[in-house]
Image (cartoon, rainbow, N blue to C red; front, side, top):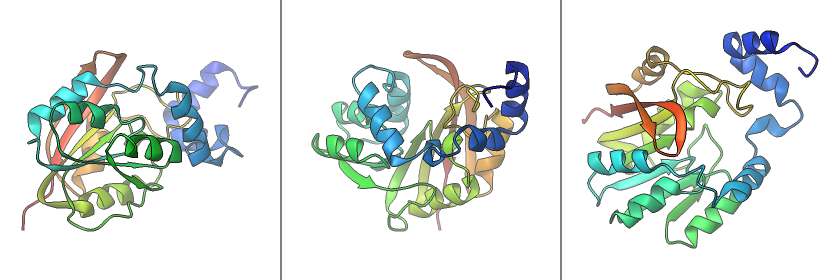
Length: 219
């Protein structure tokens, strides 16, 4: 990949993102290994790049503070810690990184270790699921979306955030796909009722973010 002109790499990244991702990350554990994220999170934990004040406020406006909420791929727990400060009491996080699991558990957040796309948690467990900047990292996305659906209670909702038409694998080698509103809706509606898809911005980031709110049908 290093010897290819940028225009060729950009074309491959936009037209064949998974192929580009696999080629760039060959021999690196796929770009989303536990070791990779231990290192990345340790380097950026306190730098503000993983803090999402607008997302946190949006979630808080949609979710009651006593809801059983899990943040899948929670990173440094910026959203969870923000919700905890707002009075949320039943907060869970799932991460591949032992560094993140141990550090957030020490702060009183109920943590689970896991490797996506499988979610090793019980059926019908949570009222709300958050997946912030996660879906674009997943190769088996349909399976992952079914797993999110499975662990939500009937009538529960998932709040999904992904980059909006930006940050393909040429920009972020861990990414395997670039979403637009149509493709995100299509990815989610196979398992969920899609309530809304719209673009938002967050204070700490210049990129546009797609926000999707989806729900699991009540029995």
